[in-house]
Amino acid sequence: MSAANPTVPFWSSAEVEAAISGTIAHLNAKGVLAYPTETLYGFGGAVDHDSVEALIALKGRPPGKPFLLLVAASEMVGRLDLRLSGYAAHLAARHWPGPLTLVLPGGERRISERLRGPEGGVAVRWTPHRALSRLLLAYGEPLTSTSANRPGVAPAMSVGEIVEQWGHAIGGGLLRVLDGGRLEPSAASTVVDCTGTRPRVIRPGAISAETLRESVPDLIGDA
Image (cartoon, rainbow, N blue to C red):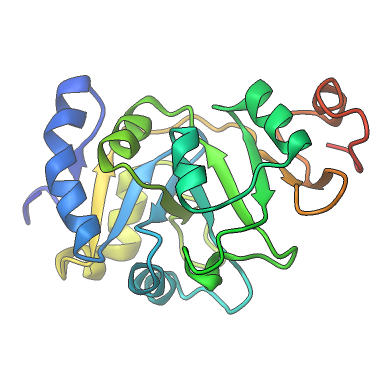
């Protein structure tokens, strides 16, 4: 990444491999990362307190509005002491990796409380994005995730939109931008609250309630 090219190529397998070491160093330095996902470009970083606060400051996130976590292995969930109940495990086994976000209990003293939502849990999705999954596996830890846009602006589908909106943060070294090309519009993930005795849809999305009920017949709500 240079002043002439403020983004890091992140498309081909060779580009992804070349980007990993510098990206992990940026994450270890509590920096914020912009990266492609299966739906849109996201902002994120490590799950420790200082990294989460850096993301909150950049995004201007209001209190009480948490971020989700992206993972690429079940071990990442377990190491944070997040709990997959019986029905949550069934949903994960059927639909991960994929467009399903599960709000899980647990994680006390392991992650920033700013990641915990109003249901009392932490939102987690196993991303199917090839390049991002490779980065996550190399890093070995989850990444926080929120859309890479300013309030009131449509989510970014290309790095050009990020550079236009966040040039100061990029130039100052706070924000590292991984360029995975222009993304195609797609449906958001379905979000299911798994903190109670029964699973409950809290945001309809790509996976319908009918499909989810094939794994958990007592699902509450529609998607």
